[in-house]
Amino acid sequence: MQIELSQCRLAFDEAGKGTPILFIHGYPMNRRLWQPQLEDLAEVGHVLALDLRGHGESEQIPGPYSMELFADDCNEFLDVMRIPKVVLCGLSMGGYICMAFYRKYASRVVGMVLTATRAAADSPTARESRDKAIDQAISQGPAPIVEGMINRLLSPYSQSNRPSLITKAHDFIDDISTQTIVADLQGLKTRLDSSSILATISQPVCIIHGEDDQIVPLEEAREMHHTIKHSRLHILPLAGHVPNLEQPGLFNQAVRQFIMEIKS
Ligand code: MLT
Image 1: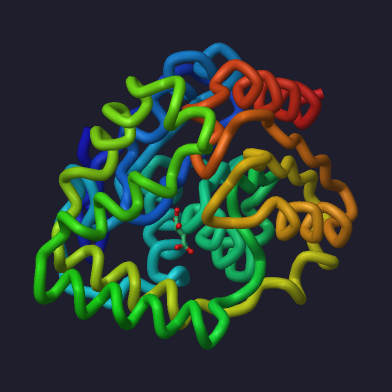
Image 2: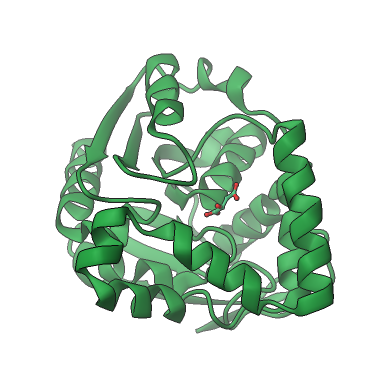
């Protein structure tokens, strides 16, 4: 489905009814990341997964894409869909967007699922890597960035034992354009540090992290858990940076339980 916002047209999927849960994908992905959740979690709520601007089937418009800009799109999306309150579920960059959303629109948030993400901003070294990736995307196109991401996305166990997951990962990354990679990277490298808001979050938070995440170390999830008052931490065994895909049963069980508790 497509929805027209003031600045761009976004594509999204929805299923189920009840408590709204908005799924926000990571960089440089699209909403197909959430296929294992849309199929399974529609029984506990109104599940919505959107393609962020420039991604998947949403409109390509010039960047940079800051986390606040993405959060504004999500907020306007909820307005147009007439959804007053929401549970946000973001993976990696999607988690950064959840935190940006929380900074601007906290009263709309009834809970958050933060997956494979962190609160910290980029370090100077990480910013340099983003600049190199921008240069590489401009000179060589998306292919080397896509390949590099696919190689780090899955846990060593998934890579060796579950080759079908590599095909699935290609499905939610392959259609990224150079323009969107650059726009995302510009937003990622300048994103704000969200560490200081963690202690102020009063809504329940469910943190889910793969124990073998090669992109965001598990330690960062543990730190968020220690700082956010009403939080729980699920560490999913044998999973890497996309635990929702590598351990869909455990992931969905954690989210289902979280939603049931929010409802009661
Ligand atoms: C993501 O999966 O969204 C990215 O790895 C986030 C990042 O590079 O910081």
